Image (cartoon, rainbow over all chains, first blue to last red; front, side, top):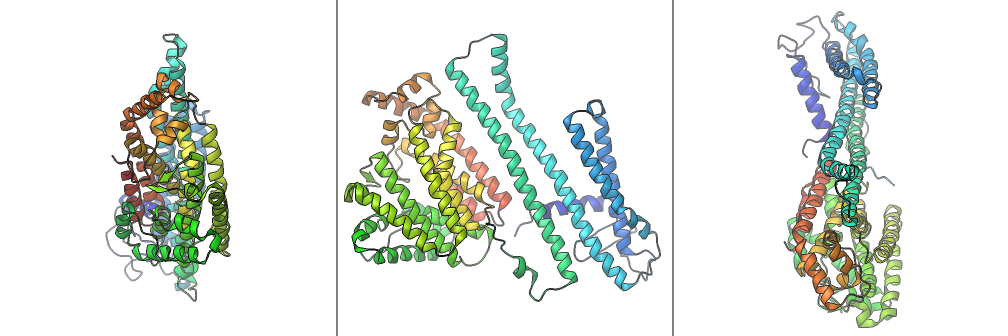
Length: 241
Length: 315
């Protein structure tokens, strides 16, 4: 099965994550952590708790992402009242809340490395889920970007013809024949249909990608409490009415 | 008649390529068995309608959608749905032939020509009733088939109401989407059992309908041939929607009783727009491929279906 949807995004997330934090790698499920000196974390070698360190670095990465969005929002301060500004602010608020959620883990990372086994296991589960939550945020953000870029593409494709037709009418340069009117109307309808389809398609794609992240979370939870039957047999082939 | 229906050459290759030869054989045997068990009063008509051969493109779509979402053998429930979709497809053919006054389909007398309109209409009702009985307790499929019959009825009325009018490509898209589009939408939902491929199915149906329109103008026989009825009745096909952008062609197209010479001019105008129609079909095919790649687990069977359908225009 090829890697698609959220899995792809998770890969991107992993890629950017390890890029941002240089010598830091993680994999959902089996956790592999390498410190900034390209050495594997091991409580015998390091006093830092690797899971706490991972979460702290997630928090760090998240904070940097938040900064980037704030800078982006700063470019549009002159039009703060417009709708795009409002949407951007809402997204930043959401990311800010997430950053606050990460904060406790930053302090954990600087704590002692002699955590108990139980605490370590619990934190591993949290790390799995947190990674999935971060992936979900990435999915949401990329969906929004993809939607707006589709709209921009559609606008670019139809704008020239439609604007020209409107301008001709407005300046009275040419009287529209019924045939021309029908052609413009057909173009306009095609444009509106595609705008609507772009919204529904993106919504379906977002739903699918988030379902996949949800499955990842469910699998992480199942690993903590193994079911009597393999996971796939329990949740496979969901039938909707 | 004890034999089973043959598979049309236009789809036998893709059936084999997708690995559905066995499933298709089972399907044909099921249909043959069903015909053999029908009331003797109806049997001759049903044998005439069902055992003459078919492309089985709709069952193939169901199988391909199932396979694109789940590996492994085709489930019994899916084969049953495929049998019933073939039933309902034949109902739509019988009604279309009556409405279009078609004497032949694929070089063979249509059901109403062979047995009379009353028998053809009654056979349609009989097939629908048997289709629902055949589905048993599969409520998901029953809901989808109900949706299909309602949408086909609406599409047929809409297409007839909107004939001989100066409409556009968007209107064609709407009509085709409710007609053939709805059939393939339902096939996709029956196959994937989750409606995730519904949009893909709709686009595949739209592509099929458009290729049929273009193939008719080219005189292609892969989809049943003929197209004279559509020109005569002022049906909005894809080439028609493009050609009537020219007001002179539009005026001829909208005439209530066009002369034979007018019909020749209209047909020539349709032919002149075939390149535009093919380009539009390419766009639809691309949308369908994009849907398949985004929303299926394994898009390969769906991409093969799109390619197969796209070739039907006879380009």
